[in-house]
Amino acid sequence: MQNMDIGEYKAYLEKNGLEEDKYTNMELLAVATAREMPDGSFAFVGTGLPLMAAMLAQHMHAPGMTVILEAGTVGPKIEHLPLSVADPRAAFRASTLSTLADAFGTIANRGFCTLGVLGAAECDKYGNLNSTSLGGYWPAGVSGTGMGPAVRLTGSGGANSIASVADKIVAMMVHEKRRMPERVEYLTTPAGMRGPRGETRFDYGLYRGGDLVVITDLCKMKPDPDTGVLYMTEIYPGIDVDYVKENTGWELDVSRVEVMAPPTREELMILRMKVDPQRIYLGRKPKRKE
Picture 1 (cartoon, rainbow, N blue to C red):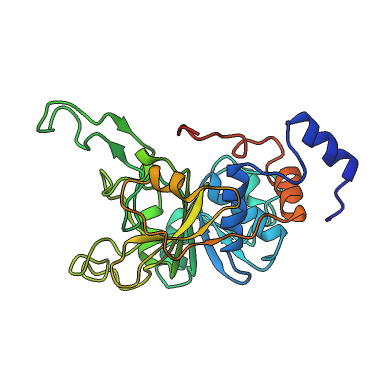
Picture 2 (cartoon, one colour):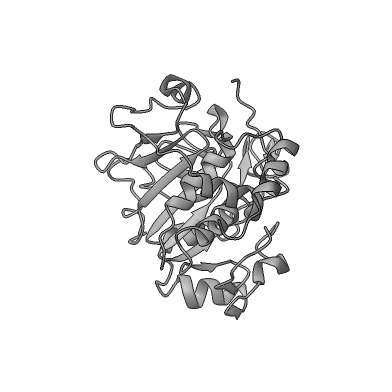
């Protein structure tokens, strides 16, 4: 398995309290996302969890996937998990080191972005993403309440631009009810259909995209072709359907759900030993009630 030492792997499992044939929710999230990233795609990949999934995909089934980072890096073969898209580790064996303007202007806006992989703080029933603010948007001096937002998040970065021009979007996030409202508090990124008929992304002039998969640490969801509302397509092994519904802010349709094939031994070994051995992201735990 890609020259990985079995003895070292067993020591890793013991050190981190893991088992070879069991997996965590964050590991399921990474595997499920990587499987949605086809070989040969031009993938605009965001910071954090998306980068982790892209690394796993490159190691597994997509060695010919071209990773594009908003800082201007094109085509890296990442060996050590970067902490941001501008981290020098993200530039290993890259074909091009350019600028943000080049990444979006020369590549994305000319139609060369076949896949975008994004994270977010909120995702609503239409696949709209919020990574900007919670509890209002305007600062205290100009807001109607005299108070600023409760939480100011990291902001769009390139998320809005990526979702507006990519053919397909994969949104990955932790599945908690507070993160899955019926409507996002601030629409940073229209990743899915944006709204019901008359309010879709196409009604607002976004003529590309709309193909969306929302992947959480519990399940996969896609927009219904008629309503645009997300429904559950796959649930992870060992996860209860009612538990997912309890942690979703809208009435989630589960009538078409299938159980996802569990992670293979090779996927887990590569994810644990090569992609995130320090468990920077794999070690995260959700704040929902188990």
